[in-house]
Amino acid sequence: MLDAIIIISNLPDLASAEQLAKTLVERKLAACVNILPQVNSIYRWQGQIQQTAEVTVMIKTIAQRYDEIEVEIKATHPYDLPEIIALPITHGLPAYLDWIGVETKRDIHV
Image (cartoon, rainbow, N blue to C red; front, side, top):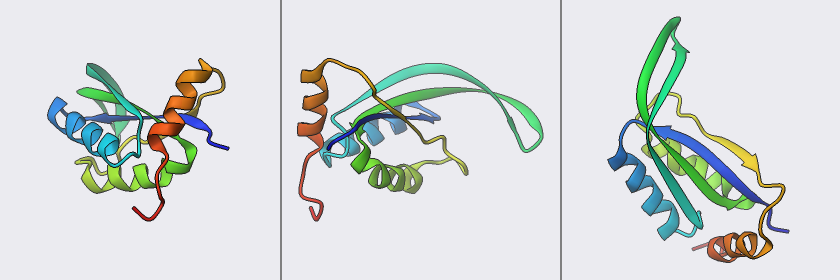
């Protein structure tokens, strides 16, 4: 069974978000990546409160592709500790969820 998920990550700029999105879709790791520009993140890092403008990506894929996507994000992300979280899609338009499965289905050895 192909379980649809959304992976969320934040990147420092639009160019890096677009490059990641194109790579994931071209490699059939993601069916679609939404890029949400100009989010404002407030967080604690190394004991200090930080406020940073970032670009959020929402990656629509299947759970079976998570590990490959995590590797790709970690390999290309400029942050020491990139946000990479996955959320299950528990409900959705069946045809759309099927489309996610079709677009991310490929031979594992490709």
